[in-house]
Image 1 (tube, rainbow, N blue to C red):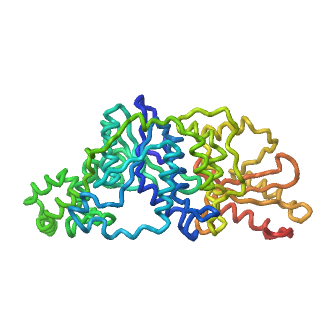
Image 2 (cartoon, rainbow, N blue to C red):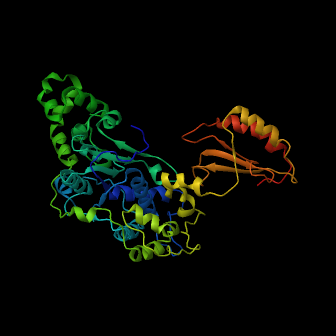
Image 3 (cartoon, rainbow, N blue to C red):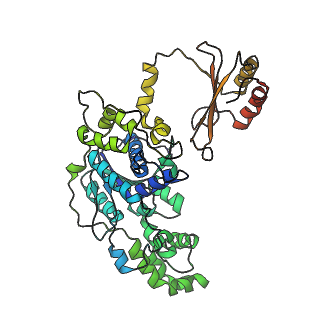
Length: 456
């Protein structure tokens, strides 16, 4: 299945369930990397979680067009798994100091968006998600679970139309399509086993991230082979006499650990939780409640598109002037990085982008240089523009502002004053024709080196 998400085409309405802590942690670390603590307002309020979380939600909502949504979070208190095994998740690092206030602001922001979130004492967010998935499908919805973890693969069910939208850290950054929808086929391709075998897979080889032991000496490769041969953990132990050599000895010695690991890895599907489907239907938000929260977090791009957000969240646009924004309210990240400035483009949906040519009155008609012949023609032309009196202006499009993270997407240039004296050379687009980057740089280098106008 393509990594580019497509809009739901089934007759059943779509319900998005969000693994809140998974998305929150990944949002935090996506923007904290190399930026001295991540995104912050001028007052020092951390905003990495809030920004990354909402960014990812908007991308998914734009592509999946859900009718309802709910989010599940973990609680700080111990769960039944910790009571069963005191070492469960014991190796997890301590929560960063600024994570908690950022998460608290996220809860306030979700309330502002009128999005419900759920917790359950003694259970994890995975259990809440598993329980809600069963209830929602029984109510006639198809369910898509947004998460960065593979633990929830076990919930995928083709008959019930439950899938997983798995995002990578790149999905939280600028202009990426790093969310993959997993059904049984994709799980089999990635993990080597089916969704129904995920729990037994973890029972055999364990899970280091959760400190689930598994059977000592049994790795992922062996676990896959055993499950593909025998089908399940119970059937493997039923056929233990048929299994030869060291693997048999390891299985025999580790049976107790396998059963305990299976217990720890199994998501509960009947958590006692109060749930009203009507509360989860997207029906918009109260602008007077949301706007002050966005102002506090200095999310000026969101404030400037409050009506677009209202529509995205299922509400109706009020016949009022859009929320005013203060251009000086830019998050301070101590590294010249602004979440809004670096991410303005991702906010626009495909339909928004399609409307731009219809609204544009600009006479500029850039030349798209996507063949070697066009590149050769451009080079010949630019060889006459190499002085400060008749210069060429150059620009690059990249995937990020941070040079160490950036990849070249395209090179633009302009000369003269006519509408068609502009050119763009695509070298790293995901769609359309591209020229090879090395070829372009090799051809352009002599022009840039020979020019005597000041270099930027």
